[in-house]
Length: 162
Image 1 (tube, helix red, strand yellow):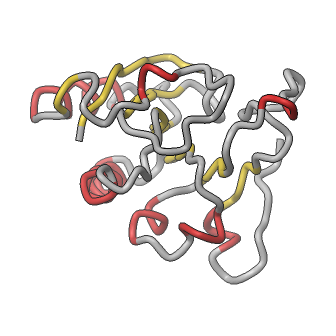
Image 2 (cartoon, helix red, strand yellow):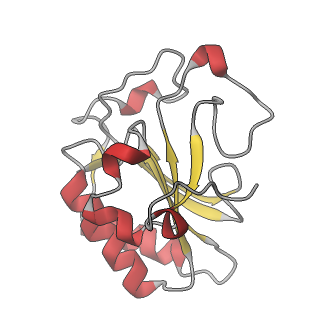
């Protein structure tokens, strides 16, 4: 797995102050994407032990609400195994913090993936430039949903409160 950046104290990509891991690899290639540099799965840097230590060090701050995985697409097929391992480790180390995951895939297509059991909120769907809405919380276009994963695993899709 490769990544482009780790940002801290982010308030745009989930609830509260967050650490965001920007992963490489995306097959959606949405027109108007704000981060096309992350599409190439070979771009960026290797997510190695040093990068993981940096990430977990930033997450260890008491004022940090949690981790957001974005990109690129964390659920790009080449990322899934490592993202699952990372999400499990995050949950073990920070059980009281939240994990948000942004993906261009639809909830209905990824809800059965192992990684989902570690995720609190999933923002799904491709970015659609014609549906761009700057008044929306935590998403760029109105087709995207902010899903409460724990409440949605029982069957009906439940949206996260804004």
